[in-house]
Length: 75
Image (cartoon, rainbow, N blue to C red):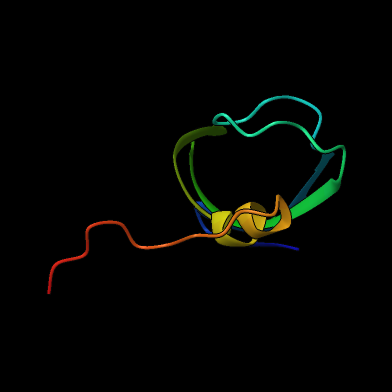
């Protein structure tokens, strides 16, 4: 999905691929991974001057089979 208003463009997208290489020390499994993201672009004179992205890494890591835990949490 893409929405534009003036110099701002918002994009909702999905990144897809098969997990085939070592990533952060995690051995590849070959499973297909689909990760959602949202990006906001600031356009000036026909060029992207700034962008902000929000990517769902939590679901990505869960799809790789990782168990996420808090380490050394002090309250």
